[in-house]
Every structure is written in C-alpha cells, then in structure tokens.
Image (tube, rainbow, N blue to C red; front, side, top):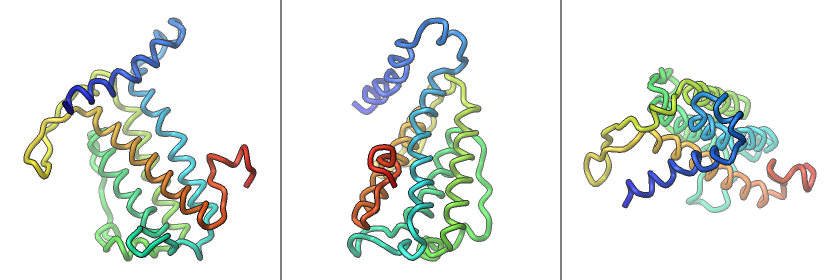
Length: 192
C-alpha cells in the first residue's frame, strides 16, 4: 500500500509537468526534481519571514506547555533539513560542536542565530535538490523503522522535506495568529 501511495506521489509532479507546453518541458532537464524544489520554496521563504517577523521576546511562546516553542521549532527545522537533505543529495552535513547541544539549549539561542541557521539549512537543501536528477528519484535506500528495515525511494525524502516545511509553516502561522500577527502567506491580502 505504501509503495502504491509513493508511486502516486511521484506521478503528481509528472502530471503537473505534462500540463506545461511541450517546448517548456523539453528545455528543462530534470524537471520532475525541479518541480519538487518549486513546491518547497514558498514554505521555506515563509518560514524565514515568519521567524524574522516574530519578536525575539516571543521565541519562547508556545500555545500550551506540551507544544514546542517558536525557538524550538526553528532549531528543530534546521536539524531536520540537514538530515533529510543529506539523504536527498548524498552529501553529508558536517555538524559543529554546537550541534551536539541539547535541543532545549539550541531553542534559546538568539533569534538572529536561529534564523541564520535555518536559512543555511534551506540553502543546503536547495543545493541538494538542484544536484538531483530525475533518474535518482527512484534510487532505493534501506532505512531502519520501528517495524524493522524498510526499502524506500529517494523521492520519499523529497516528499518528507516538503511536508515537513509545510507542516512547520502551518504550525508557526497558527502561533502567529494566536499572538495577534498575520502570517507571511497572508501578507498580500491582509497586510503585515
């Protein structure tokens, strides 16, 4: 069942690509991989704008005690981006000594530090996807899961990246609304 769902997800960019004029499609090498990149770009940009517009004094905000704070989401997003995109692009992230600090410590870093680190992780991801060829989307990996080893396609990590960016943007947008702020995706309609 999972393989069928993954194949369906792989077909979505191809179906969208098929709707482009033929002269556009033939001129674009690795268009399916580029389609994934274009789906992730708005979320990464909106996340950076959101983190930038939230006052540093609100980086400890979380709607309820069990939920993550704004700062925690930023540091988590950075690490998740590096982990996913190392697999996508086949180039390892080289963590620094600061990366071994506990998540709760990194979540309290200054706003500028957190934003710079999220931005760098998004740039790392962009470079990984730009190097990717359409043929590599079908590369198989064996990964450990709670149910034991599982064989997955490289395309799965692209879907995980885009889903993670979209989910965290939704999370931050909800936090912004609770703080009385308008999230970046609505700025054109409601102003800042």
